[in-house]
Length: 313
Image (cartoon, rainbow, N blue to C red):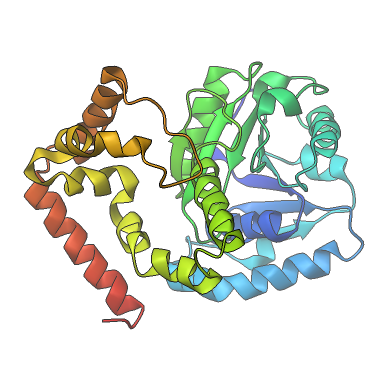
């Protein structure tokens, strides 16, 4: 058997039907795929169909693929039956390393050897999860964000045994399925977005513990502050604009020493010339020819649109 092209996947097997797995099921159904699901819980099918039904109005509003239907969902009794039919497998079991190792080995044994198997893990690397699996070259992380049927981002990264072709194939498949993809070059615990979320989360807990801010103040500081900008341009381009017409280069040269100020409980990396240049060049690539004035206008239009959509302007 040869691996189907990313654009030719027709049947997706979802192993695990909780909040994340069920969200994947709803998403793939909305994109027109046939979905086969398996979960060991006795009430798994009832909970899964309830989740899909609850998500379907939002997915319908976003726009369903031609022929998309909840009737294309089949819930089966065994893992072997689910995996035998797959063109692609998305595993979404609880975040337990021993469970992941055993389950991925079982999935790999039950799935045709050329079918890609992706894990929704939110923190473990595939290198540590694939230790018991045969054909570990086709095991890869495809980390979504909750709810997977609404949040576009998926982080794709392989383990030491994962074939680079499989990483590329998986990224292409998710893009074809309508996702926004970060195709990571190396494993790092928590991937990209969770590490950033975790840094903010830890600092928030410190502030609550020390009586420096309330829960409500912390949430408001993001929803009515930088969160509005991050939805449009992210933290790097946000600081690129903070440098005025000088962009990120001016920002780093002017404010770089403040990295040593005790604004957070996290230690800042040394702002070496190499790090400075990498950040500046990255912003220039992301700007892709857009001037500071262009980016400011784009940001302002976006923030106004978000505020109006939320009924706050």
